[in-house]
Length: 75
Image (cartoon, rainbow, N blue to C red):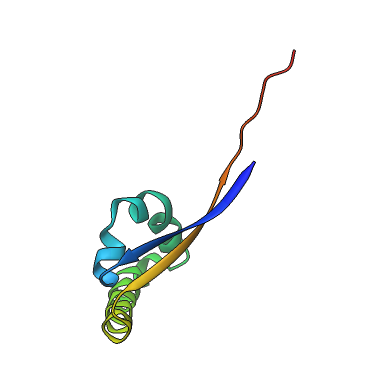
């Protein structure tokens, strides 16, 4: 087994929320924690806040823990 942390950098919150990997691996779960009737407004506000943070910092960094497991079948 090997472990490492990958860092993804985004120019702003809009780029983060529209990135293919974020949509594939994270966005669905993030949306499920918000009531459906509040989801659109909550994610609009999240995007605004992330964009403001990126303006202040110069970008956004997301760190993702990774694991690689390799096994061998035994009979």
